[in-house]
Image (cartoon, rainbow, N blue to C red; front, side, top):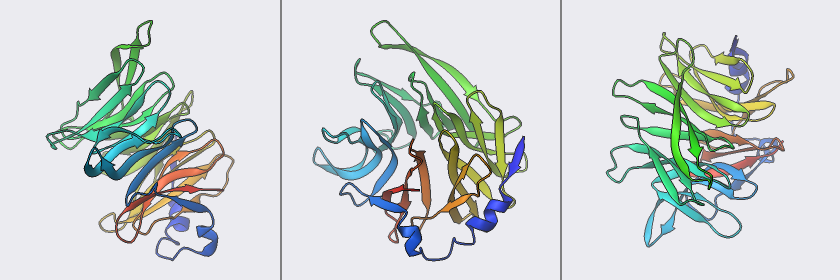
Length: 293
């Protein structure tokens, strides 16, 4: 089944070049954790905000993968970002020491195991983690094609990881597929068709895969909740016009979300329905936000 975002484009891009109104500004609050640059990928009720933060660590100023519980900020890896955190494992991606490629990682604090994932030629991105520790994401090859994976850990009786069962995932007839979000509601992302266009997809647990297309534009789904999903569309000669949106079940109109000057990325839909993500300011620096209904 295929749906179109053509109607969405009329709503979204009508506001893309306009300043934020006072009503729009009242919908969201800024989160920067005292940093000049924060990529906020989510907020966990126990482990707090997580993502990538520009900060000082062990005497070195840089960008670090982090999560921030009430007990104090935890740095997981340099030059990286945490994309999922739970009581048993922390997952994300980081730049290798050589600086040549980006690798996925999963850290199991209880057993003190740190695993890297690097099937990609230049990038392996872990973009989601399920309750059982399964990680999902995508990687590239030397032919500029992208492939998605689902890796499920097998644990021993103490909870330590023995190995991973590896599966691949692809949208039917796609030349590239990127899982951009995976959680216990399902998975979603973007894919490239045979004509070169990029469309979004959503596959809820137990449901059919739904694709979303936009004429002369690209669609990416980056957040998935119980009844809603969110992402962004890009258009323009160089795909340089970006606008975030949210769509919910029940026939409600799509909601354009605009926080930043340079772009807005929604990364999480909280149980309350609030949206979590990051945006860019006029100087090109990232900051986190929570958009409240």
